[in-house]
Length: 260
Ligand SMILES: [Zn+2]
Ligand SMILES: [Zn+2]
Ligand SMILES: [Zn+2]
Image (cartoon, rainbow, N blue to C red):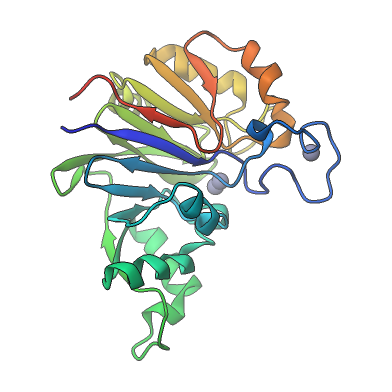
């Protein structure tokens, strides 16, 4: 496989950081690493750009990352912080003169058909986003020659998909991973895993729980994403972490060094 890397386009929870009208020290921080857009990522090979989720910051993230073409968009689940920017795929439609392949499971597709009904109308208004839906389940599939392994996790009661491409696993919006799904992640060189903040939460791992999962799997490099302002200042929290764990930040690019 040619060089595979993952770029963390956004690493914030649903409200982003800073939070509107909040004056806490994290929201007031001048450190760019404390500025977190909504969680999203981009897998890149020499040929392919595969985006994971299209939240409300999708446009800004694509501009920041200077993405010129998208080959696929994979959706983890239907919460709006992962979906609200879908209309902005139009720019890629115009550039490629083609629909964008959007991979999602059946339940998420049902949601898309309601939320973005105008894009699926029989005689759509000119200029609507052009989406080619590809229904997936937990079975592995291929994008060109790149194998994608979905990882089933739970986000409170909501089943969500994480994805493993090559030796990189990406799992967000999770507070439970069954043993057999952990096995799909095991052996990854890089794991990106979400943790909201320090206190327990009904639908997200807190930092302590995420660190337990990370310790169980013992991947070489581990990165935290989907953080709220309650996580604390990046520089301070980073010092408290094990040596193979880092807080993610917007724009961080992590190359796979061990090829599959
Ligand atoms: Zn989320
Ligand atoms: Zn705040
Ligand atoms: Zn969610």
